[in-house]
Length: 355
Image (cartoon, rainbow, N blue to C red; front, side):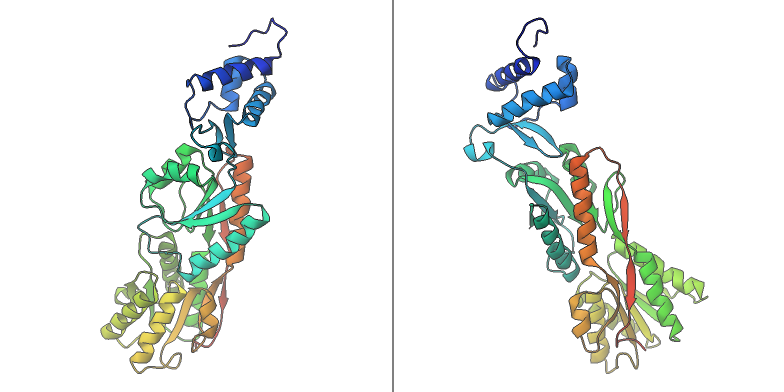
């Protein structure tokens, strides 16, 4: 420990004490030290004194400072690790999700987030973790300073990242205690269905994503809200669940047409399913929008070039990326900052698939 009665500066005494414990393996390789506050209380000194000692140990490559996480003992088995800078952001899709990186909305968010990372001198990489047990090694090996979770996330992953102290931001998902970037799903869906009702449609089918996804739950809520507002009865046979894909939308629309030909419009919970629905409608010998109007959600690039071009609810993915990066950097600076929710506005974009 330290002796305040001798002339050796306190920060040098702390430095020597910690160095001895590291070299004697009391603090093991890659083990995290107590926080700066805890060490200051242990030694009975100001935090500035402790910080100065830690900075010397970092300079000696005995410790590594991980922004937003803490300070750990360097890996003595690797000189490369001792020079490690935590300068990357992980873009993680949980292993069982249907929202693969090839899905246009996810890919667009990744594209713009990569630009935001470069502005802040961070690199961005994508991974699809199969198990929460893989997270600790993954974070250290890839120099991760923060995680962006997109889509549905199992509690085990979230709890593990929180335990590790890694700043995390969720996109299209909300877990209490975590900062979330959310879409105005209810408002956007309600606007889309109200637009179809305004065109004279009363029998409006709905193709939704998997029911355990937040986006799917809220877009269904917006659909029901619009119908109720105009006194239109809900027909459960006109609601189909698919998997966010073109093929899923195609299959769902075929079932809707098999059940009944009364629907004059269909609203799909994302654009890929809407495009699949249009194909099924056209294969059935019907014309979009003369026989059935179609509306999607997300405004992916393909919407403007489909035949006919797709009316959709637009989400600005560059805005999603911008808010995500800002929130992540804020958490790096202030790890104990309260969690917030950012709602990205939705806007109806009218094209040729509706009449």
